[in-house]
Image: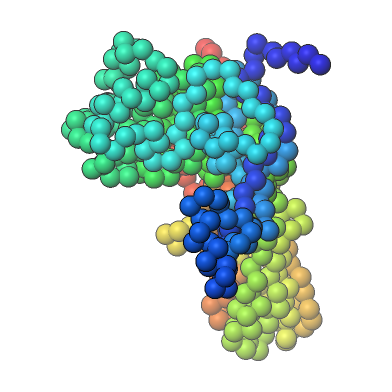
Amino acid sequence: MVIVVSDNIAIRIRGLGKKYAIGGPQERYLTFRDAIVKSVKAPFKRLTQKGYDEPTNEFWALKDVSFDVHKGEVVGIIGRNGAGKSTLLKILSRITTPTEGEVDIYGRVGSLLEVGTGFHPELTGAENIFLSGSILGMKKTEIEQKFEEIVKFSEIEKFIDTPVKRYSSGMYVRLAFAVAAHLDPEILIVDEVLAVGDASFQKKCLGKMGDVAKEGRTVLFVSHNMKAVQNLCTRTIWINNGIIQKNGNTAEVVETYLKNSLKADIFTDLPTVIRSLPNDPALEIKDVIISQDGTSCTNVINSKPIKITIQYIVKQKSTGLRVYFDLLDEEKNILIRSFHDDDADSIPTIEPGEYISSASIPGNLLAPRTYELRIRGTIFNVRSCAGDGIEITLVVEPTSKINRGYAADTIRSKLQPKIDWVTQKV
């Protein structure tokens, strides 16, 4: 069989798998006879039966992984910790050998998988720049042309002639990323190492990766920062338990991943909080449900509506009794306050009984941030009900496409409504 590889392919992976033995060989107690045999034979023969138990548990970090990456493509790799993302990148970087499958790479690879990857601790920062460039197959003249730019980007000019073994982790990652991004590899592989740097440097790195992508080089980017993935990557691969769950358009893959990951984030301690509310003669809150797409959760995505459902009992006939919610930012500023009877033409009188009131916060309104949601009750112009109410932490994750063209930009507002603009050249 003849396999024709397109000239446009940068990475081709077929049936890739990596297996590890959990725990390794375990030494067991020996009899006196076994101990003598071990002492005689150990120098000449590795023990596989006498004195050792072979591992019985095997763990597949990757299993049957297959996909192509085209030249000039920026591909995101997402998944929970332990999903197999870093194992995949280590195989592509030739650090780890696969147990099965094949990997074909067409182009020079630059990798940044962990702090100081490929650096020699006894060499200075300047010497390591030339070492890394040589490993990538670059000529001395090429490295010299980029040297000043690398040093300036890393912001460690003062320490460039100091051995890197004396660098802090932040200095390591600054120089390592500067080298990987500036020495013109055709394929750039970056793991979640940018988390080591400070916020300003992370922003700078994301901007540089955006520039690298625009230059037509291939990028594989592993990150837990969904906003960065959406801004940088045209395609995303979701890996779960070593298996590809979804491979396709970034927005669709990220949304599916977040919805799946957030199903388990139901606030299980809410019944305890409700039971601790003081007894009120007029109002008893029975339950509160925060949901999105029919799933109860306190971690939500910002592109879809968030439903708030309050179940309560009105104990006595009351005029102006209201249930409501406040949405607060991290500085305790009230961003939204909404009552269940906001659309009433006059102050209503509520008869005793059990009620369910539901509200919906529109999609594309909240910026990706952490908020506080307070559920409360009140009798208008009389008093509050049910004590201080219920406080719930609401975490909003990014999935909307707002601001997608500016990878290094940060969210400046507490709300992020999707505003339609029209621009015309005059």
